[in-house]
Length: 126
Length: 111
Image (tube, rainbow over all chains, first blue to last red; front, side):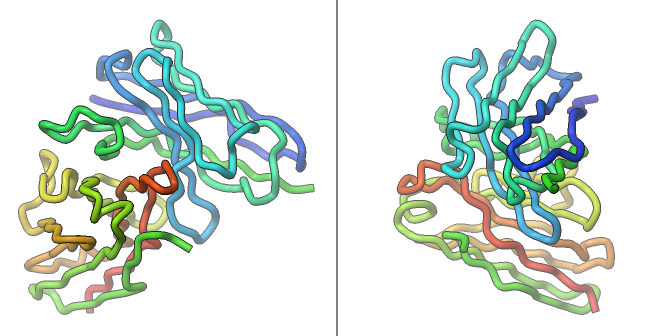
């Protein structure tokens, strides 16, 4: 069974740091782009960051650039999100997500998101 | 404010057909980037419903279908069932923002 399990969420003060982890199983982790998507309380979905299969390419939404770092350890089948300088507006459920390629379109910009973890909650508050 | 627009809500009686629209622009859907649709039951993680504009993943009922034309896309649900009551999000890529973008979501209510 393909599965993603996030951990590392919690309550942190503004300006603090957290590191989210995601354990992948049931598929060849090293063969897929991966991404983090978040959802603020009562709000919609927001893409946060993604990373290429070998970690050589990383992209971020503007609001987290310079504060968040995405990484992956293929030997441990794990995805990470290091979050620094956290703000109240970063409060959300963070989902670890696997990409699925669209047949005939070998470009990550066309990919959909086919496997989602259960999410981990990050609360930034004083 | 999202660059993809969806109606806040749609509703229909059991067995009816409903559609959810997703309107973008020439920097996302109109530029040829594929549209993907997700279903989210409150309190649970989103689930991929349609990818690549029209492709249903294994296990998704054929009551769900996607289409795309110009700068817009649509999700159709035929034979509406009580279990289809959820929030539905469209998603694409925007070249102006260099980011994946989601629509604001549409709540589908089964009357």
